[in-house]
Amino acid sequence: MLCQISRNHILVSFAFVLVIVGGIYIYSGYDVQTLSVCQPCDKNSEPQVKDEMMDEVMKHCLDDRRWRIRDLQMQTGLKYSQPSTMNGRTDVNSVTNWNAPLVWEGTFDPVVIDAIYKKMDPRIAVVVFAIGKYTRFVKGFLESGEKHFFVDFRVTYYIFTDNEKDMPKIELGKKRKISLVTVPSANRWQDIVLGRMKWATVTIDKQIRNEADYLFMMDIDSVFHNRFGAESLSQLSAVLHRGYYKVTRDMFPYERRPKSKAYIPADEGDYYYTAAVWGGYLEDMYKLVKYCYMQSEEDAKNNIEAVWQEESHLNRYLLYNKPTKVLSSEYLWSDFDPLPGDIKVVRISQLVKNYAEVRPNGGQ
Image 1: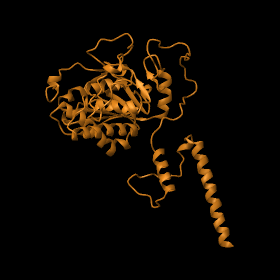
Image 2: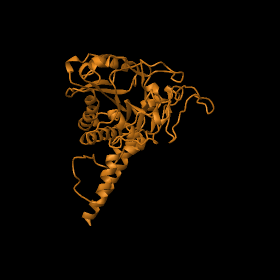
Image 3: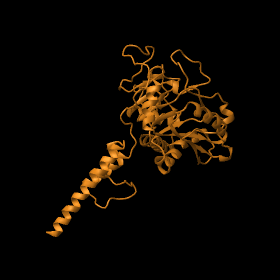
Image 4: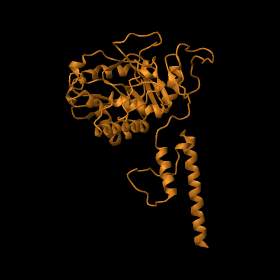
Protein backbone atom coordinates (compact mmCIF):
# COMPACT_ATOMS: atom_id res chain seq x y z
CA MET A 1 0.00 0.00 0.00
CA LEU A 2 2.76 2.40 0.97
CA CYS A 3 4.57 1.61 -2.28
CA GLN A 4 1.36 2.23 -4.26
CA ILE A 5 0.79 5.58 -2.56
CA SER A 6 4.36 6.66 -3.28
CA ARG A 7 4.00 5.71 -6.92
CA ASN A 8 0.73 7.64 -7.20
CA HIS A 9 2.29 10.69 -5.57
CA ILE A 10 5.18 10.57 -7.98
CA LEU A 11 2.88 10.32 -11.01
CA VAL A 12 0.68 13.19 -9.82
CA SER A 13 3.72 15.35 -9.07
CA PHE A 14 5.21 14.64 -12.49
CA ALA A 15 1.95 15.54 -14.24
CA PHE A 16 1.72 18.75 -12.21
CA VAL A 17 5.25 19.76 -13.20
CA LEU A 18 4.46 19.12 -16.88
CA VAL A 19 1.37 21.35 -16.67
CA ILE A 20 3.35 24.16 -14.99
CA VAL A 21 6.24 23.97 -17.48
CA GLY A 22 3.84 23.87 -20.42
CA GLY A 23 1.95 26.87 -19.10
CA ILE A 24 5.15 28.86 -18.67
CA TYR A 25 6.29 27.85 -22.17
CA ILE A 26 3.07 28.99 -23.84
CA TYR A 27 2.72 32.13 -21.73
CA SER A 28 6.27 33.15 -22.67
CA GLY A 29 5.17 33.58 -26.28
CA TYR A 30 6.44 30.42 -27.95
CA ASP A 31 4.40 28.65 -30.58
CA VAL A 32 2.65 25.75 -28.90
CA GLN A 33 3.46 23.62 -31.96
CA THR A 34 7.13 23.76 -31.06
CA LEU A 35 6.46 22.10 -27.71
CA SER A 36 7.07 18.46 -28.60
CA VAL A 37 7.63 15.23 -26.74
CA CYS A 38 9.89 14.07 -29.57
CA GLN A 39 13.51 13.75 -28.63
CA PRO A 40 15.95 15.45 -31.02
CA CYS A 41 16.10 13.22 -34.07
CA ASP A 42 19.49 12.15 -35.34
CA LYS A 43 19.17 10.87 -38.90
CA ASN A 44 22.48 9.03 -38.46
CA SER A 45 21.28 7.03 -35.45
CA GLU A 46 18.87 4.10 -35.48
CA PRO A 47 15.94 3.92 -33.06
CA GLN A 48 16.23 1.18 -30.46
CA VAL A 49 12.76 -0.19 -31.26
CA LYS A 50 12.15 -1.04 -34.92
CA ASP A 51 8.43 -1.05 -35.58
CA GLU A 52 5.86 0.92 -37.55
CA MET A 53 5.01 3.20 -34.63
CA MET A 54 8.64 4.16 -34.08
CA ASP A 55 9.06 4.81 -37.81
CA GLU A 56 6.09 7.19 -37.70
CA VAL A 57 7.49 8.97 -34.63
CA MET A 58 10.88 9.41 -36.25
CA LYS A 59 9.24 10.69 -39.44
CA HIS A 60 7.17 13.15 -37.41
CA CYS A 61 10.21 14.42 -35.56
CA LEU A 62 12.23 14.88 -38.73
CA ASP A 63 9.36 16.67 -40.45
CA ASP A 64 8.92 19.02 -37.48
CA ARG A 65 12.56 20.06 -37.69
CA ARG A 66 12.16 21.35 -41.25
CA TRP A 67 11.62 25.08 -41.44
CA ARG A 68 8.23 26.11 -42.75
CA ILE A 69 6.53 29.45 -43.37
CA ARG A 70 4.17 29.76 -40.45
CA ASP A 71 1.02 31.84 -39.90
CA LEU A 72 1.19 35.17 -41.75
CA GLN A 73 1.17 37.34 -38.64
CA MET A 74 2.30 40.93 -38.20
CA GLN A 75 2.29 43.45 -35.37
CA THR A 76 -0.61 45.77 -34.61
CA GLY A 77 -0.44 49.44 -35.52
CA LEU A 78 1.46 49.00 -38.80
CA LYS A 79 0.59 51.69 -41.37
CA TYR A 80 0.32 50.62 -45.01
CA SER A 81 -1.81 51.17 -48.11
CA GLN A 82 -5.11 49.31 -48.21
CA PRO A 83 -5.06 46.52 -50.82
CA SER A 84 -7.60 46.71 -53.62
CA THR A 85 -9.75 43.93 -55.01
CA MET A 86 -10.27 45.85 -58.26
CA ASN A 87 -7.04 47.66 -59.11
CA GLY A 88 -3.61 46.22 -59.87
CA ARG A 89 -1.31 45.19 -62.71
CA THR A 90 -3.35 44.64 -65.87
CA ASP A 91 -0.47 44.38 -68.33
CA VAL A 92 0.90 41.09 -66.99
CA ASN A 93 -0.39 37.83 -65.55
CA SER A 94 0.17 37.53 -61.79
CA VAL A 95 -0.89 33.91 -61.26
CA THR A 96 0.08 30.64 -62.93
CA ASN A 97 -2.43 28.09 -64.22
CA TRP A 98 -1.67 25.96 -61.15
CA ASN A 99 -2.61 28.95 -58.98
CA ALA A 100 0.87 29.90 -57.78
CA PRO A 101 1.77 33.61 -57.45
CA LEU A 102 3.66 35.17 -60.35
CA VAL A 103 5.50 38.08 -58.73
CA TRP A 104 5.92 41.46 -60.41
CA GLU A 105 6.44 44.98 -59.12
CA GLY A 106 3.04 46.20 -58.03
CA THR A 107 1.72 42.80 -56.92
CA PHE A 108 2.92 43.03 -53.29
CA ASP A 109 3.40 45.60 -50.53
CA PRO A 110 6.98 45.47 -49.18
CA VAL A 111 5.89 47.01 -45.86
CA VAL A 112 3.43 44.19 -45.21
CA ILE A 113 5.70 41.44 -46.58
CA ASP A 114 8.64 42.52 -44.42
CA ALA A 115 6.50 42.87 -41.30
CA ILE A 116 5.31 39.28 -41.71
CA TYR A 117 8.57 37.57 -42.62
CA LYS A 118 10.91 39.44 -40.30
CA LYS A 119 8.76 38.13 -37.49
CA MET A 120 9.61 34.60 -38.66
CA ASP A 121 13.33 35.50 -38.84
CA PRO A 122 14.45 32.86 -41.38
CA ARG A 123 18.13 32.20 -42.06
CA ILE A 124 18.82 32.92 -45.73
CA ALA A 125 21.69 31.15 -47.51
CA VAL A 126 23.08 32.35 -50.85
CA VAL A 127 25.29 29.95 -52.83
CA VAL A 128 27.53 31.48 -55.50
CA PHE A 129 30.57 30.15 -57.37
CA ALA A 130 33.61 32.36 -58.01
CA ILE A 131 35.95 30.08 -59.95
CA GLY A 132 39.03 31.32 -61.81
CA LYS A 133 38.63 34.85 -63.17
CA TYR A 134 35.06 35.07 -61.86
CA THR A 135 36.48 36.17 -58.50
CA ARG A 136 36.52 39.70 -59.98
CA PHE A 137 32.71 39.81 -59.68
CA VAL A 138 32.54 39.03 -55.94
CA LYS A 139 32.98 42.61 -54.73
CA GLY A 140 30.15 44.05 -56.82
CA PHE A 141 27.81 41.19 -55.96
CA LEU A 142 28.36 41.50 -52.22
CA GLU A 143 28.36 45.30 -52.00
CA SER A 144 25.13 45.57 -53.98
CA GLY A 145 23.62 42.64 -52.08
CA GLU A 146 24.20 44.44 -48.80
CA LYS A 147 22.12 47.34 -50.12
CA HIS A 148 19.24 45.41 -51.66
CA PHE A 149 19.16 41.67 -50.83
CA PHE A 150 17.02 40.73 -47.81
CA VAL A 151 18.03 43.84 -45.90
CA ASP A 152 17.75 43.35 -42.10
CA PHE A 153 17.41 39.58 -42.47
CA ARG A 154 19.91 36.91 -41.42
CA VAL A 155 21.99 36.17 -44.54
CA THR A 156 25.05 33.99 -45.15
CA TYR A 157 26.87 34.21 -48.48
CA TYR A 158 28.46 30.83 -49.27
CA ILE A 159 31.19 31.60 -51.79
CA PHE A 160 32.65 28.55 -53.52
CA THR A 161 36.07 29.39 -54.92
CA ASP A 162 39.38 27.93 -56.04
CA ASN A 163 41.24 31.07 -55.00
CA GLU A 164 40.50 32.29 -51.47
CA LYS A 165 43.36 34.80 -51.50
CA ASP A 166 41.54 36.87 -54.15
CA MET A 167 38.41 37.29 -52.03
CA PRO A 168 37.77 40.99 -51.27
CA LYS A 169 37.16 42.30 -47.77
CA ILE A 170 33.57 43.54 -47.63
CA GLU A 171 31.91 45.18 -44.66
CA LEU A 172 28.68 43.34 -43.96
CA GLY A 173 25.60 44.41 -42.05
CA LYS A 174 24.38 43.03 -38.75
CA LYS A 175 23.35 39.34 -38.83
CA ARG A 176 25.15 38.81 -42.15
CA LYS A 177 28.33 36.85 -42.87
CA ILE A 178 30.48 35.13 -45.50
CA SER A 179 31.47 31.47 -45.55
CA LEU A 180 34.19 30.45 -48.01
CA VAL A 181 34.13 26.94 -49.47
CA THR A 182 37.20 25.69 -51.36
CA VAL A 183 36.52 23.73 -54.55
CA PRO A 184 38.84 22.57 -57.37
CA SER A 185 39.40 24.49 -60.58
CA ALA A 186 37.99 23.37 -63.95
CA ASN A 187 39.17 23.46 -67.55
CA ARG A 188 35.73 24.01 -69.14
CA TRP A 189 33.04 26.49 -68.13
CA GLN A 190 30.54 23.70 -68.69
CA ASP A 191 32.30 21.67 -65.99
CA ILE A 192 32.08 24.63 -63.63
CA VAL A 193 28.34 24.88 -64.26
CA LEU A 194 27.76 21.17 -63.75
CA GLY A 195 30.16 21.11 -60.81
CA ARG A 196 27.99 23.66 -59.01
CA MET A 197 25.35 20.98 -58.49
CA LYS A 198 27.87 18.47 -57.16
CA TRP A 199 29.61 20.78 -54.70
CA ALA A 200 26.38 22.44 -53.58
CA THR A 201 24.90 19.00 -52.85
CA VAL A 202 27.94 17.98 -50.81
CA THR A 203 28.12 21.25 -48.88
CA ILE A 204 24.40 21.43 -48.09
CA ASP A 205 24.70 17.91 -46.69
CA LYS A 206 27.81 18.62 -44.61
CA GLN A 207 27.34 22.23 -43.53
CA ILE A 208 24.56 24.44 -44.85
CA ARG A 209 21.70 22.21 -43.65
CA ASN A 210 22.61 23.13 -40.05
CA GLU A 211 22.95 26.85 -40.78
CA ALA A 212 20.05 27.89 -43.03
CA ASP A 213 16.29 27.60 -43.47
CA TYR A 214 16.08 28.94 -47.02
CA LEU A 215 18.57 28.76 -49.87
CA PHE A 216 19.17 30.65 -53.11
CA MET A 217 21.43 29.54 -55.95
CA MET A 218 22.74 32.59 -57.82
CA ASP A 219 25.33 33.61 -60.43
CA ILE A 220 28.20 35.69 -59.09
CA ASP A 221 28.51 37.81 -62.27
CA SER A 222 25.43 39.79 -61.23
CA VAL A 223 24.66 43.04 -59.41
CA PHE A 224 21.62 43.97 -57.34
CA HIS A 225 19.92 47.24 -58.29
CA ASN A 226 16.70 47.23 -56.28
CA ARG A 227 14.90 45.37 -53.53
CA PHE A 228 15.10 41.57 -53.63
CA GLY A 229 13.33 40.41 -50.51
CA ALA A 230 10.78 38.35 -48.64
CA GLU A 231 8.25 38.50 -51.48
CA SER A 232 10.43 35.85 -53.17
CA LEU A 233 10.13 33.32 -50.35
CA SER A 234 8.23 30.09 -50.90
CA GLN A 235 8.76 26.35 -50.81
CA LEU A 236 10.29 26.52 -54.29
CA SER A 237 10.70 29.76 -56.27
CA ALA A 238 11.77 29.87 -59.92
CA VAL A 239 12.60 32.89 -62.11
CA LEU A 240 11.33 33.45 -65.65
CA HIS A 241 14.22 33.62 -68.12
CA ARG A 242 14.26 37.12 -69.59
CA GLY A 243 14.70 35.82 -73.15
CA TYR A 244 11.72 33.49 -73.21
CA TYR A 245 8.95 34.84 -70.97
CA LYS A 246 6.95 36.22 -73.91
CA VAL A 247 7.32 33.40 -76.43
CA THR A 248 5.48 30.14 -77.03
CA ARG A 249 6.77 26.84 -75.65
CA ASP A 250 7.98 25.63 -79.05
CA MET A 251 10.65 28.34 -78.84
CA PHE A 252 11.94 27.30 -75.40
CA PRO A 253 15.53 25.94 -75.51
CA TYR A 254 14.55 22.75 -73.66
CA GLU A 255 16.59 19.60 -74.09
CA ARG A 256 14.77 17.85 -76.96
CA ARG A 257 16.96 14.73 -77.32
CA PRO A 258 15.22 11.74 -75.72
CA LYS A 259 18.58 10.22 -74.80
CA SER A 260 19.15 12.95 -72.19
CA LYS A 261 17.62 12.83 -68.69
CA ALA A 262 16.64 16.47 -69.24
CA TYR A 263 14.42 15.60 -72.21
CA ILE A 264 11.12 17.46 -72.56
CA PRO A 265 8.77 16.55 -75.46
CA ALA A 266 8.01 19.26 -78.03
CA ASP A 267 4.37 19.69 -76.99
CA GLU A 268 5.06 20.13 -73.26
CA GLY A 269 6.22 23.06 -71.14
CA ASP A 270 4.97 25.86 -68.88
CA TYR A 271 7.72 28.48 -68.75
CA TYR A 272 11.45 28.54 -69.34
CA TYR A 273 13.28 29.18 -66.07
CA THR A 274 16.78 30.54 -65.58
CA ALA A 275 19.34 28.62 -63.52
CA ALA A 276 21.05 31.88 -62.57
CA VAL A 277 18.57 32.56 -59.72
CA TRP A 278 16.36 30.05 -57.92
CA GLY A 279 15.50 29.40 -54.30
CA GLY A 280 13.34 27.63 -51.77
CA TYR A 281 13.20 25.85 -48.45
CA LEU A 282 16.56 24.31 -47.65
CA GLU A 283 15.39 20.71 -47.94
CA ASP A 284 13.43 21.32 -51.15
CA MET A 285 16.41 23.04 -52.71
CA TYR A 286 18.67 20.20 -51.61
CA LYS A 287 16.36 17.74 -53.35
CA LEU A 288 16.37 19.80 -56.55
CA VAL A 289 20.12 20.50 -56.57
CA LYS A 290 20.87 16.82 -55.97
CA TYR A 291 18.43 15.89 -58.74
CA CYS A 292 20.28 18.10 -61.24
CA TYR A 293 23.61 16.61 -60.14
CA MET A 294 22.46 12.99 -60.35
CA GLN A 295 20.71 13.46 -63.71
CA SER A 296 23.84 15.10 -65.13
CA GLU A 297 25.87 12.13 -63.91
CA GLU A 298 23.46 9.76 -65.66
CA ASP A 299 23.80 11.77 -68.85
CA ALA A 300 27.59 11.59 -68.60
CA LYS A 301 27.40 7.78 -68.35
CA ASN A 302 25.41 7.82 -71.58
CA ASN A 303 27.90 10.14 -73.29
CA ILE A 304 25.52 13.08 -73.54
CA GLU A 305 25.48 16.54 -71.99
CA ALA A 306 22.20 18.46 -71.72
CA VAL A 307 22.07 21.43 -74.06
CA TRP A 308 22.11 23.98 -71.22
CA GLN A 309 23.69 21.79 -68.53
CA GLU A 310 21.98 22.11 -65.13
CA GLU A 311 19.45 24.64 -66.48
CA SER A 312 18.03 21.92 -68.74
CA HIS A 313 17.65 19.51 -65.81
CA LEU A 314 16.18 22.30 -63.68
CA ASN A 315 13.50 22.98 -66.29
CA ARG A 316 12.55 19.33 -66.58
CA TYR A 317 12.21 19.02 -62.79
CA LEU A 318 10.08 22.16 -62.50
CA LEU A 319 7.82 21.07 -65.34
CA TYR A 320 6.71 18.01 -63.40
CA ASN A 321 7.23 19.43 -59.89
CA LYS A 322 5.64 22.87 -60.12
CA PRO A 323 7.27 25.78 -58.28
CA THR A 324 5.14 27.27 -55.52
CA LYS A 325 6.05 30.80 -56.62
CA VAL A 326 7.25 32.13 -59.98
CA LEU A 327 9.30 35.32 -60.00
CA SER A 328 9.17 37.59 -63.02
CA SER A 329 12.25 38.51 -65.05
CA GLU A 330 12.70 41.52 -62.75
CA TYR A 331 14.54 38.99 -60.58
CA LEU A 332 17.19 38.44 -63.23
CA TRP A 333 17.62 40.81 -66.13
CA SER A 334 20.85 41.58 -68.02
CA ASP A 335 22.83 44.71 -68.65
CA PHE A 336 22.98 43.94 -72.39
CA ASP A 337 19.20 43.75 -72.98
CA PRO A 338 16.89 46.79 -73.37
CA LEU A 339 14.04 47.11 -70.89
CA PRO A 340 10.50 46.41 -72.14
CA GLY A 341 7.55 48.31 -70.69
CA ASP A 342 6.39 45.46 -68.45
CA ILE A 343 9.66 45.40 -66.49
CA LYS A 344 9.05 48.26 -64.05
CA VAL A 345 12.14 47.58 -61.94
CA VAL A 346 15.32 45.54 -62.34
CA ARG A 347 16.14 43.85 -59.06
CA ILE A 348 19.27 41.99 -60.12
CA SER A 349 21.06 42.01 -63.45
CA GLN A 350 23.80 39.98 -65.12
CA LEU A 351 26.84 41.99 -66.13
CA VAL A 352 28.19 42.52 -69.63
CA LYS A 353 31.47 40.63 -69.92
CA ASN A 354 33.89 39.13 -72.39
CA TYR A 355 33.18 35.40 -72.09
CA ALA A 356 36.26 34.55 -74.15
CA GLU A 357 38.39 36.35 -71.56
CA VAL A 358 36.80 35.20 -68.29
CA ARG A 359 35.88 31.58 -69.10
CA PRO A 360 38.61 28.93 -68.79
CA ASN A 361 38.06 27.51 -72.30
CA GLY A 362 37.52 30.86 -73.99
CA GLY A 363 33.75 30.68 -73.88
CA GLN A 364 33.56 27.65 -76.16
